[in-house]
Amino acid sequence: MDAAMTYQGDMSGRPVLVTGAARGIGLAIAHAFGARGARVAINDRDPADVDRAVAALREKGSDAIAVPGDISDEHACAGIVAKACDGEGRLAVLVNNAAIGRAAPLASHKTDYWRKVLDVNLTGPFLLARAAQEALRQARGAIVNIASAAAYGMKDQCSYDASKGGLISLTRSLALEFGPAGVRVNSVCPGFVDTEMLKSDANLHRHSQKFAHSLPLGRLARPEEIAEAVLWLGSDDASYVTGHALFVDGGWIRP
Image (cartoon, rainbow, N blue to C red; front, side, top):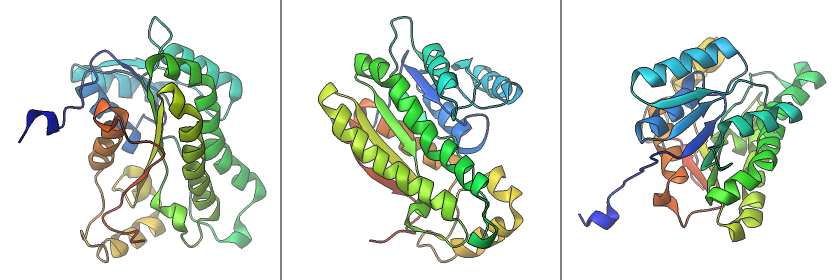
């Protein structure tokens, strides 16, 4: 194979911010960037969880720092971004991964819960993109939003589905706005991923196991498989890709 066509993914020394990175998909993303030489800023709400994730990356020789905070809080977002940037105020990649959601039919879907899901899953990425826009422009960087195949709709998941559909639309809008500055914006849309979060919801986990058998690939995704897609979109190897929603779902969504 021609060397020019070989996947590189080199992120040496580049500052990368990953939200919701204390566990699951977010932690796998942090490890993927760290293994390629990035300086990874790990965000999550619980400082103790963040410290454990930072320690896990450092154990493997990666450069990682802790930037705990609530991404649904506008003032917290400014501080998170400032700590994640390098000494010249640049941010190479912003990965908006933090998300919440649980299965509940509309009749039992409380308004406060709807707002909480939208605050974390959609408003948080908006706030962080706004706070990071100058740092991303300086680095000619990239935003990767973790949306979901559920954006196409799943039963009893109205708030989560709406938030992820909105995140895909936000991705496309920001790609148009930031493109002239050399900043790329894309989203990754996982299907069911074998994480502790999925296993913690007994009904959802049971459904996912049955659903996996109907997929062309016949299984759930591993967090590392999502992470590799995010790494590619955040790297220079995807330098001509923007405004795209990449479905990493085992063949679930077939337009």
